Length: 367
Image (cartoon, rainbow, N blue to C red; front, side):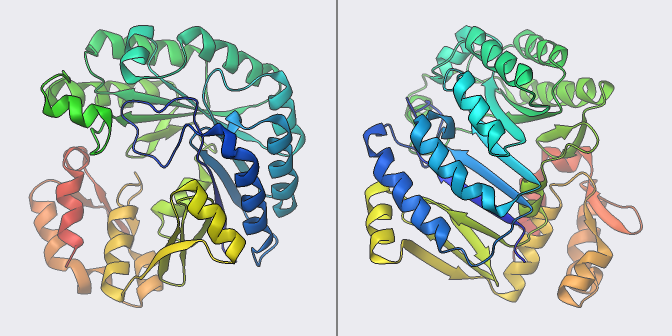
């Protein structure tokens, strides 16, 4: 059985300046989109998933009627972990009650920064007060498992700004925190601004200081790093995302969603109308790729090394019927000598230096 289902909602009130996700400010298309999405859901050939993750875009931007239609369809899969992404200012008590009623038990909310000035620089639609109101509604409605997304390395962000963000978020006592470094992606307004010299980013030393401040402070509050950018209290790790990092199979539905089944990775049309047309014609798949044996091993390595626990040697052997050192002995030993990997007997994992140069580590496994 495939454990995880991802559902993509590609609508936003406004596109953030750094965002390269598949999202559109075309809310008038949501009725037709949800109808197509429901058609795709009904074609799924299994009746249960361990995890469902509804992401975007901004899933809670949907109207009450469309949100209810989607939830009614998804509830039949009886997920143990059922996550909905949201952004401050896009939910009210009515929507939160609906999520709760249909079994959603994990919320991921995008705060990014504590300072309104930085939120404005990112092009976010919300202010801090909007986040606090949303968080309060969720807590009072009985949601216990809440993730807060934070971003560091933001234009003009100081170390003091980041400390203020971390310390205030800790006071809210969330079960999970994601800390992502800003990446200036091609095709975004930030990319254009950066190339014109109009984007002032913290230097690399400050960016790393921000990261390790978060690691230290979150750990002191019992929120441990279990993946490079993700931290949680014990038992509140995101089971859905662990599916990806463990290189296991998953199904993705919706515009631009990716699936990985039996060594084949395929994705739907990104454009909303092309996706809807494809579903109505019986096939919305835009492209597919068969992952060969060597690439599968490489992906297993660089995805698994993102986890703080690293890669279990026995799990590699069970998956590929080979000893990990028979395949990657030279690469592993070289990375150990450079202080980027550590062998702890039954597993290998990144060192702190390895995390700082993770892309350099991962490229070693691509042959």
